[in-house]
Amino acid sequence: MLRAVKKHNSKMVSNRHKTVYLFVLLCCLLASCSKLKQWAYQGIDRDQWQQPDKVIAALQIREGEQIADLGAGGGYFTFYLAKAAGPNGKVYAVDIDKGTNDLIAERAKKDGIANVATILANSNDPLLPQSGVDLIFTSNTYHHFDNRVVYFSNLRKYLKPGGRIAIIDFDRRAWLEGLLRHYTPSEFIKREMEQAGYTLRREPTFLDRQSFLIFTRSD
Image (cartoon, rainbow, N blue to C red):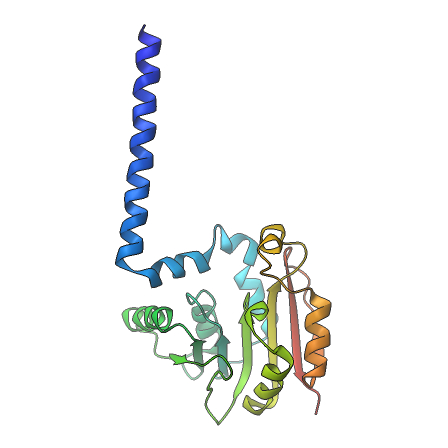
C-alpha cells in the first residue's frame, strides 16, 4: 500500500514538473520569440562541440581588424570576435532578423562593449560598410544562403586587400543537422567558393561535426 502511494505521489510530481515546463515554455514564446531563437542558436553544450576559443585562435585575428559576423543569429560568436579585434577593431553583427539584432545590441550596451554594431541585411546583400572589412566570418549559416556562388561573388567588393572569408558549417558527420538538411558537404563549399572567385588557404580540422574553411580572393 505504501509503495503504491509513493508511486502515485511520484507520478503527480512528474506531471507537475511537465506542467511547469510547458508553462515556462509558453511564457517564453509569448514574451519574446527573438529570445527563444537566441536560445535555439546557442544550442545544447555548444561550448564543448563548437570550441570557440580554438576557432578564434585559428582565425588569427589581429588587433584593430574590421570583422563581419555574417548571419550572427543570437550573437554566439559576435562577442568572441569583438574581444579578439580589441577596442580599436569593429565587429558588425549582420542578420536579416531585426529581433536577434536588437538582442545583440542590448547585450553590447549592457556590457559596455563599444566595438559591436548591428546591420540589418537583406537576403541578397549584407550591406557592409563600403570601406570594407578584413574578415567575413559565418558559422552554421552557409546552408541557408540562396544562389551561393552569386552571393559570395558579390561579397568580394567588401573584402579589403588581403581580406579573408571563414566558413564553418555542419557537414555529413552531423547526423541531426543532416536529417534536417541543415548542412553543406565541405566539397560543395570548396567548389562553390572557387566558382565565386576565392582560393582555399587553410582548413582547420579540429571540429568534429563541422567543416572549417578559410578563403581569400583569387585576384
